[in-house]
Length: 317
Ligand code: M7G
Image (cartoon, rainbow, N blue to C red; front, side, top):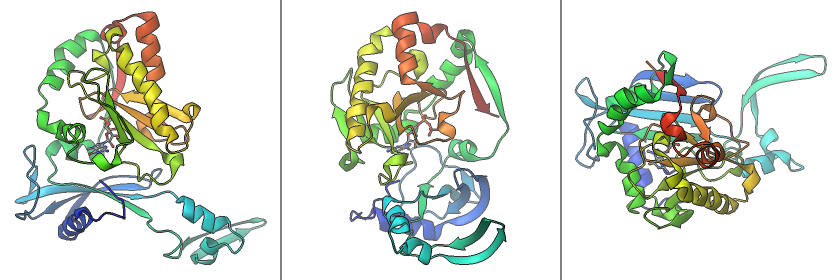
């Protein structure tokens, strides 16, 4: 979701309208480390609402919606306010309760409105499908060791059964129907080209949290499992141009973490490009595969490395 406060295209009023109509049903999950909460609710359909690409989940007769609320990091402006000599940020804090022991003191409080604006990131999926709900609901997770045989008999048919509508958002970006004003870099080549733009998880303000996503133009590569030495020109091109894109935010090539997810949520090849300072669940062992290692495995070990490898990952029940 675009959180650009300069929005004048009507997107913000639309989102505000949907949030006002959201009726809470359940907390799907919450994560104290990323200070994020996932809420399931319903929104009574309205003529102006977007048609669902897929069958929406229905809860008590209404279309399901998921709202994600995340406390966002201090912005560069807030950091400046906290550090300058008269420390506007600190002066604005209203303390609620506090403790002191020897040289140590701690308290909870609330920063003044001017110091921390905006302080919340909101993402909305509406209408949400059962898949969206399952993805975010707290669930039992377990390790799976995917052998090539398991991939061929279970995962590949599963990937092939996914409706194209599930990656409609990808095609919308590639055809420049949405988010085109945010494109940071494009190589239009249909075989080795891609679009790089801010990931929806990043508000494009604090570059310590920089999170870009590179989406390849070709539509035949679903995941890591499809990559061979034939795709080295694409992968090397991606590695090189990701550095060019990141430099637009002042992030240097050696400050980048480039990786693909296996399993991804969306089966259309894309690369995650983040600042190394950013840490999170998406970078955990068992999900993130560094692009450098992918290139090295294919180029120097075996062209069919990812068709022969047993790949372990964590799967929700
Ligand atoms: P993934 O590895 O398939 O799954 O990555 P994950 O979401 O479980 O990490 C897809 C990436 O695309 C994620 O980093 C998403 O935040 C990002 N993403 C998803 N959507 C629907 C959009 C979108 O509409 N726009 C942008 N810019 N990024 C998106």
